[in-house]
Length: 305
Image (cartoon, rainbow, N blue to C red; front, side, top):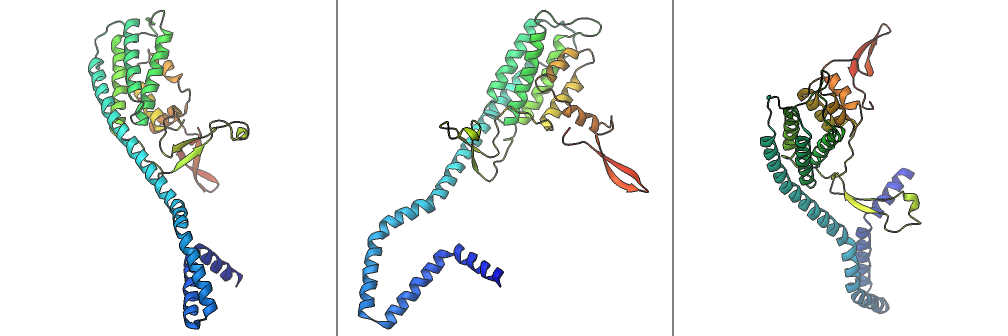
């Protein structure tokens, strides 16, 4: 019985405006049927007050009811503009990718690597990364990761590139390396790369929320689903793709370049997933069903590794 009453109360509270209209209708029906002069005078006075209050109440109700609609339209407009910006910049990135693929093709002619060539290729990739800032977020993250890897390699070869039995490089080594990665950036730039989550704007703190009492303007607003940060999740498909390309286009005697690619995001997680996909190791988690107290394994990669 109590549950039934609670449900009825919730229903009335939810539809309070219908209840209010119903009360007014019943009141006016009663007034018309009774036809009492004093009651009529009170009703007319009440209607007069309502008439005077109608305009300000209408404005207030309009603001209350219209704000969510206005907010949604502003968010929709912002997201539409962001899509257009990303779409336009994707075209610019694709154009630059085609230029770099033509400039740094896959070749097998052995020309000794020099630092001038490294500096030139670093500057070209840096320019590509800057053009990708307002393009598909993944193309920006990927191009920046490529730039940081080449920059690290260039910094480590300032006094000359290794050229011995264990470690040696040619211009074609770096050219082929860049060509394959630029091809992946081109693929990323063919799509928008994200979908906003329910067009929701979330309020976030710049500093710790504990400091709210002691600082001003400690917040910013962000549309869910649009991520322009340079954070790389350890289980990211982007990282797996990046290191897979490194493995496929570099040789065993390119250890310094491998190391330079690892330093910007020093995580073994992408390699664990690459090895798992190639059935090269026993995964870190075994799952399965027991048969006569013996686990029949069904292997999987831990999402936490």
